[in-house]
Image 1 (cartoon, rainbow, N blue to C red):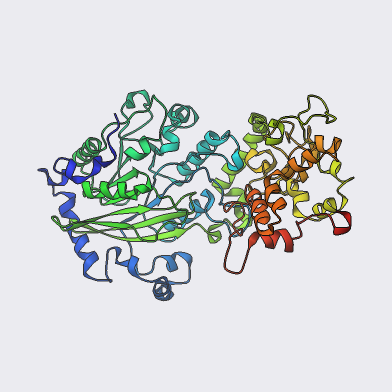
Image 2 (image 1 turned 90 degrees about the horizontal axis):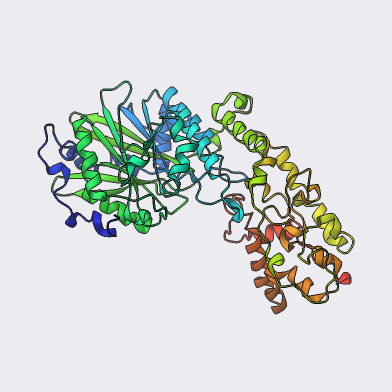
Amino acid sequence: MNRPNDELNPTSIPASASSAPQARRSWAFQLAALGLTLVSALTGLGLAYLLKSPASQAKKAEDEGNGILARLFPNWGKPDFVVLLSAQQDGYMLPCGCSRPQVGGLERRYNFLQQLKTEKGWPVVAVDLGDVMQKRAPANLPNVQGLIKYRYSMMALKEMGYWAVGIGETEAGALARIEGEWAANSSQPAVLLANLKNAENFPFLQATQTQTVPGTNLKVGVTNLIGPTVAGHIKDPAVKFTSSVDCLNEQLKKMRAENVDLPLLLYHGLATGRQEAIRCAQAFPDFPIILALTEEDEPPAHPISVDHPQSGTRNYVFRLGQKGKYVGVLGVYRNGPNFNFKYQLVKMGEEYETPLDQKANQPIVRLYEDYTRELKNKNYLKEYNQAMHVLQAMNPVPGLRNPGDGMPHYIGTEACKKCHEFAYEVWKASKHSHAYQTLVEAKYPSLRQYDGECIVCHTVGFGYRTGFANDKDTPKLKDVGCESCHGPGSLHAKNPENQEWRERMNLPWLAARKSGNEQAKNAAIEKFCVGCHDIDNDVNWVHKQGKDPFLEKWIKGKIIHNNPPDKE
């Protein structure tokens, strides 16, 4: 039974675990020095590093070499180990976007992690919050590829040596399918969910993962919990949750019994809801490190700190943004019975891309190729049901010469040329006219023309009735053509003088055009464009002072294709 949203309020729980009698010193006591370190100075050990400006960090890095890692971790010395934190990949195996600069991607994360291990020689504990699987597909497609992308993502995390991955909202709503897709076939990384009420039905799940960090005598424990706000979003009646408070007390007890030195909590609470994670930190000071959800793509550089005046300790809530664009690196330093930390947020930019001459042997790149090859071999394009386009769902117009049953179908851009020659020539000179070929020519991974989540924005009508199916059956619907924006054109082509269908072919911006408001018309057209040119796929489509990306591409990019005045 789900608990109310305020269940983690410290006033509503029994005495925290850190105040209970223990055989060894409590973590709250062991971390007391950390709190003092953090408030006493901006130098030395601890998260004081967070308070230094990037400029001062870069300057001090000059004495430590010119490499990327030296610039990232100036004056870190050698930690006992580091924890690599990642979160909320949401299906983004590849870097976010189809245009440069791109950010994120599992290939780059692998390369970065290898640098930590080989160039720095640091022992690494890698854990992921969860929400690895995508919640929805792009461009309003059904989520056909979510599970296969989850499987390949987990294979990549295994290749990286991840210890543990949490179950988030997206995975919790598909536990049975996840078991068959991945978890039943591999025990690494451990898949964690501690507060599932009927956990016996999902034996692949673990409540807690504990391991000794290689090369040290320090033991780390990781557990994962779905908080009440996220639990309320999961509609699967087979998935129910126990009390968050009781569950965390139980996991802390287990970690003590296994002599865990540093406990980590992966916490899923919505970020109205960063408050929910803060309440969790307030209630459980024995979790010095809490990795939580965030609603922003761009994460904060600093964690949220939560003080505990009675014990003089402090714990931290880390948030890493969405789509796997960033990772967090937490340096852990043993200081007698205490721990000190340093932290660096790292953007997975192009500097971590595999050199071209090494691509073929990069293990995550090979997984990408396996993924697209599987899409091709299993004909995943065929798995997408064809919905009705809005023009296909509208009532018929009396008196039209209707082909077949009267439902408009896609006819291809070449069929529009006879009546719209000027617009056709503008289109032919644009990048839209060879959008499909960019998928054919893509490398690392190749075979992108068999990926429905790419095809949807590089063809005409994919996912709609009579729209693009594949290059053999519907070759005339390759590329981004007239009907990509105007909709299936057969009835308009048969009845070019019918005003009703002329207007329907311009429906998304019709009202604004009739009003004569040019700004409103442009806004309506842009709203349609960003269905594919969203911030993820076209990272340069960002409104900045003095620059309108729509006008840059629509007018300066010569996409605008109104008939010349003498042809109106």
